[in-house]
Image 1 (spheres, rainbow, N blue to C red):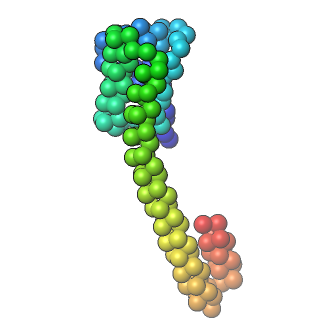
Image 2 (cartoon, rainbow, N blue to C red):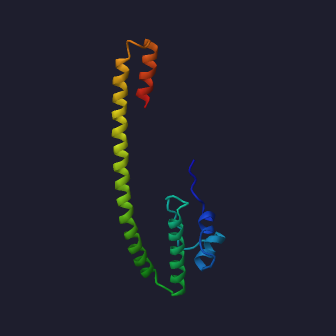
Image 3 (spheres, rainbow, N blue to C red):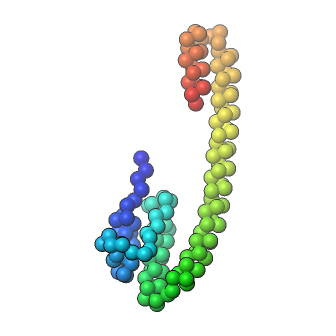
Length: 137
């Protein structure tokens, strides 16, 4: 149902200018850097823009001969800001999942109670079949 875009998909969304790092990745040559894939919604325009910006920054680092220590520092600052935002979304999603779970449990209890009230109107086989389906839910 969901497919993770491959490196070719990610590269196709990036700007056309080349850099040593991008050329090495495109040609499958080993390089010291690793291309990161973020398992977020792949069709997000803003996410694609983020990837382009990251490649632009990497190209500028190469052009300016930025040291690995400086690249590490820049990356840590960027990742810290993104991590803070991501943690807020994780907390909100967890709360949403917990809310859905408690509401579905309430619906299940109500359905079981309703089923108990129908015992005299339904055959034993019908009640057993419905009860089994409720227990599976």
